[in-house]
Structures are given as structure tokens and as C-alpha cells.
Image 1 (cartoon, one colour):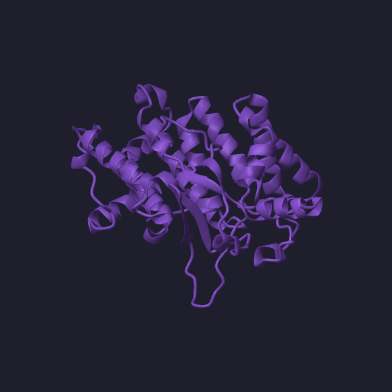
Image 2 (cartoon, rainbow, N blue to C red):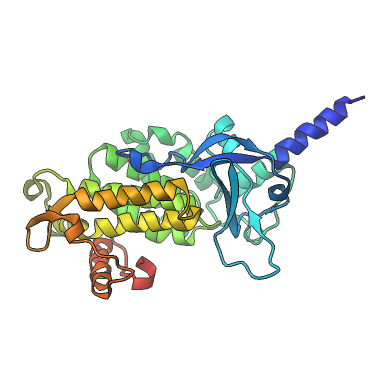
Length: 350
């Protein structure tokens, strides 16, 4: 006879061992996607005994994703022989039920672990303790991101800007948790207000300043999402109507001109990162590669001599062409300078 306790145990085991069946989202089919839109499409849950044995870490060395009905576990860091394979517990169903959790908030993360999986994480990151704002500043930051889909409003913009300044005044690092979400709100605000140069500066700050040093590390799928936002901002900067009148200073005009030469390489990097994260044989990688090839062949823009030419006549793979790689680094550092970011090396940019 099955007892009530047996039913409870079965439900708990299913709940604690299920993996969200998340399929990578084909984002290039959208003219623009908010940085808050998930990088995956939720299609159900999977119960897989082997995958269920993979322990959680807030700083994992692997991620799981699905290619159709196939579960794949992909290394996102070098894993030494004998080293344990770890992944993050699936927060997606919490997103569906309770709204998006701020995974980088130490206290919120610890609470979610206890309430939903009944364990206390003791990974290397959690042993560092709470590295973010404390007390009233933490509450202010949480309130600023609480209604982030309302980020177009001027009140929300002012609240977010004020919170960022207060975090910096407190002597906390640019990449403490919540800074990423706060900058996402600024990005969405500038895009909605048709201020692409400001949006571009924010996208560069997120991708090259905040995300590389955030603790816990920013997941590869979120990095791809930010790269997509950066691509969109570059497109908008290039397409500023009547730039000679609309752009008021030399710094912004430099960004407008340089964006044309950087865009195809950032788009190519976006495709490469998808192939690295999910595998070049996946549907999303094939789709994005096909989309990029079509873009290069069809899109026309001005070259350095202000001749209207196909992008295919301008684009060369920076991985293979030394001269093109050197020019890309120079142009990228021009844009980073416009965003107030220190110059970066070839290795950091490519």
C-alpha cells in the first residue's frame, strides 16, 4: 500500500532531481530582444539519473542544455582528470513561478537553495561570504531591480542611476552583484529612448568590465545575451539618421564611424561564442552561422574611402588575418575609449 509519506518522498525526489528542459533561444530572428529575455526556451522537465548525480556549485565547471530531446553536459572550464563535474541547480522553474531571481545576490541565493532544494551550499564562492552591498544599500539595490521591466520610466532610470552611484561611493567594485542587472536596465532605457550611443557604452561596460569579474561568474549563456545586446547597439549607432546634425561631439562621431568596422567582427564573435557554448552541430549554432553568412553577403555599408560596398568585401576573419586582427583591436579600443574603458589587449578582445 502506498502511504502519504511515500507520495511525499516521490514528489520531493522528482522536484529535487529534475532538470529544466531549456532549449537555446534563436535570438537573431528578433529585430531586438530585451536583455532580460531568457537565453533559453523552457519546454518542460527532464528526469535523468546520471545528470541528477551532478552536484551543484555556484561556480560550476559545466552546464547542461538540450539539443532537441538530447541532454548535453558541456564543459565551460578546463576540468582536470579526477576533478568533480559540477553545474548550477536549475532556477528556471523559480523564474516561471516567482519571477526572475538575482542569482548573484548572496542572501537570495542561499535562501533559494534552502527553500527549494533543502541544502546549504558550501562551494568556494559561498565560502567567500557576502561580497555585495549591505543593509540599506542592499535593500535600495533590490528595490531598484524589483520592477525592471518598467525600466523605460524616468523614475526607474533615476533610481537605478542613483543606486549605481551609491554602490560606487561605498567603495564596492564595479562587478559586485546587482551592478549587472542595474546596467541592463540602463541599456533597455537608452534603447527605448533612442539613445544608441549611450546604450553602446553600457553594453561595453557590461561585457568587458562587469561580467568578466562578477562573483559568481556570469554564465556563458548570459555572456552571449550581452553580446547580442552589444550587436544591437552597434547596429543602432551605425543607423543614426542624419549623423552630421544628430551627433554633437567628435567623440560620438568617432564611435559612429568606427562602429561600422567593428560590427561584423562582433557579430562573428557572437556566432563563435554560441558554437563554443552549445556546440557547432546544434540547431542554434547552425542557424546563427547561416544568418551571419547571409548578413555579410547582403549588407552594404561605407568602407574607409566612403564607398558604398558589400560587407563581404570588407570583412575578414580576425582569427586568420593578422592585419585585420590588428585593425580590429585598434578600432575596438577607440570604441572602448568612447565608453570610458581602458585599452585592452588582443587576447582580451578576441
